[in-house]
Image (tube, rainbow over all chains, first blue to last red; front, side, top):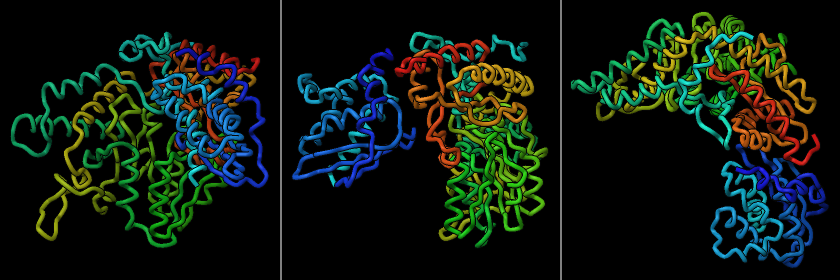
Length: 141
Length: 410
């Protein structure tokens, strides 16, 4: 295991930069997600208008992987339709499960491909997928 | 510093020769589970090569041999904890099952309004069974709260009163390493007529536990935390109490007579051991006790004290480490919980692992304690007889790299 494949500069920047970690005024959807075994605990706030995610943020606490994954996800889904956001969540989870055959599909995930190597660290997979599962739950409401 | 234990014993533990991420394995997760010496591994393998049969059931040679091995293991456990009789030793799956058995089979001892007293630092396994029992029977669940040194202040003991029917407490906290004064707690509880349950899962691998000395009515522990195999644990209970409790699981081998519409149960301890028992586990536990006795619990305790003192001393030199629990090492087992400033415990644990150091991160199955302390999670290191000062040095060097990996200057 090479730590530099996991704690990449991008992930570290998102872990420390808190531009997406803030309360949101009048969110239309609030979804709570947590990993009971380790204590990662996030609340995802979304404002949906006419089928579009116009704003999103999160609060809570967790490890660098879960915090960065949440922040990168929020950057990616803002301005996307709920259908597109769901597809991206599905794609991200497939990437982590190593179920993607055509690498070009990964382009859609933009910065979130930084988590591709998490598959090699089974103990940390749940940290990376937490916000994406939370997003799925939020959008299914 | 002089070693109370010959450092060569590391060679008794085959897995400790393993390389992890290119480095020598430094195993500091002993409060979660311990590694096994060769005599334990061999005893289990030898059981299957030589003796396997269903105990207490057959007249054939292998069944008789399995029965004898199972019973001998109980005799060894009985002597190890200084019980009166091996009939007071019940084999279970682990401490968790022992506590669930108690909460289930003791339910008729309680009436509405009675109180059960725990400590806030209990493991979930010593909270949840009592919580359900309390909810189902309208009992009150009370907690002894600890101070910022991880000890129970004298004033908390007022909570032991005439309504208290049961006190259940871990002898050693699995998060803070505090060793609680269970002998005194037991005496106070008995003065009020309460039953005393001691969770010895964290203590019995490391310090001498004598059920008569602490006057425990019940005591539970798991083999895997004391060099033995997973899947076997012990419930000790005073015979007169066990005699008056209904069985927990029903099935084979725990009966006297079974008719179409009623049954009578076997005597203690068989009444509490339904189904084919874990003979390989019993044999492995016995081998583990023999190993511990060969090294000597006093030596183990002295060795771990040396390791804990050294680790504390070196950790206190690092300004960005925050240690939880007692700094008075007299009341401290070989467990240290801490956090690294700005870094989540899971990231700390991942970085340590990359240097071959096994630690634990999370809430350690103690959510009420973590909430009480106002933290989400911590990193925990925990020592055992095969750890060395060099292990601590490697841990300290590795911990110094954590913040750099997470993008902080130092």
